Length: 205
Image (cartoon, rainbow, N blue to C red):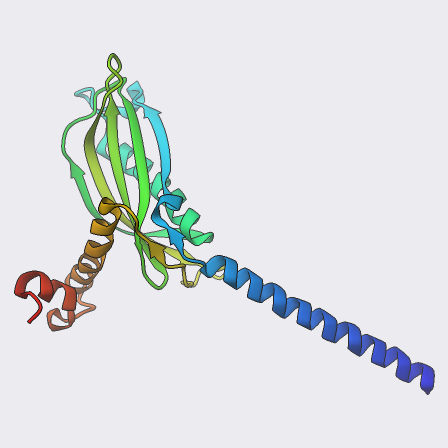
């Protein structure tokens, strides 16, 4: 009986030790994932060359191809912030300011502008580089929304974002207004509940 008791007690000790280790490990992982991150840490950059199969009959880059490039680089930025699997939730705004010609060197820069509970807004700025001078000119931009999901595909909390530069702060402040507008248009929020939009038009009344 004593041997059996010692054996069981040893297993109980190992079980408790493993349980404590698991709890500590889970706490550590949660701390790592929930640590606030600077917007600059989410910056993601890619450079493309516009090839013949990327263009339309006018010799300009397909809008759909540009959207695909934007979607990919935006997902990288969202992943860098959340450290989770991310999925595209919406494309809130796309501005095709000027056409991009065949053989152009195109650089896309994506950065998280604000993080909410499980979603992240990402700005994508598109630049075309002059092949002779090397100067860059902004020609397009888009705003994407991504949601972080767990292994079951359910939304999961993401860290807070810390804006630092003037542009990051401006985009951070505007993100809540853009989200509220999207919710109103989708019928998920009443206009009277959109506090940030009301401030924009009515001030701090």
